[in-house]
Length: 296
Image 1 (cartoon, rainbow, N blue to C red):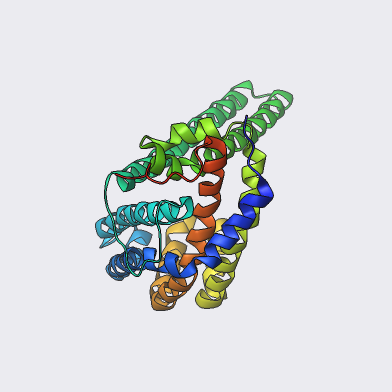
Image 2: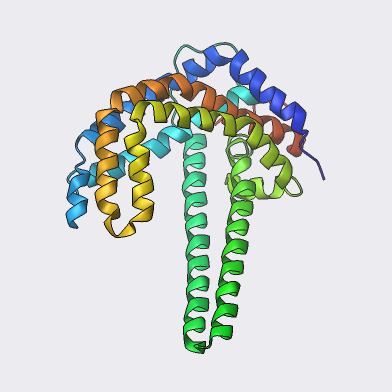
């Protein structure tokens, strides 16, 4: 069983991201601009305040389409950056946009992962509900407390199982789809056996710092009011729609700044997300730097 070399994987991720930052920008700027334009137009036409009164907000359909388009753009960028990290591309790139079989496989893997997690979450919620109903039927304090404790244990174990499965299914599905030409989720699950904690450590060292940076930058752009609204919504779930509308309005007002922030951070984010998986894939698959296996 191959093991991911944690230190080498982290070093490669940072060396690739900052050493090839110009190429990464060239690979992603066209799809990033397209996604930003579509997102901006969708949010401009979306009136979240209508949801506070129980109606379907104007522009809701366009917003859903923009989310699907964003997933497609994710696939386009993921394939391009992964190919570069795998050594399947040579030289620098000023502009790039490709939509073919590899991108569609990655898109399918993305939606497949999403629906699997939703399915697991629904099954977990149903199990917890059944235990809660059982507690109500038992009626006694001792039996009810035992059922409540069991429900808590089931929930914690279930959330842990969802996280475990999500990590293993997602880590290598992009390079697997690019190189192997198949549904990457299955291959990712096979290759990551025995490497869960190594993947978590790699993620903490590469992805987490960028997400913290993005979060700090968003706080600076959106201001404390946005996050105060989130806290208020968590405390007052009965009026969640009202707080959601407030957050949407604040986001819409700062959208140009948020888009500008995204253009600055996105190349770094994509490099540190996809480079570790590319390096680990070469190690775990034993294929090395394949020169032509990623051709469509």
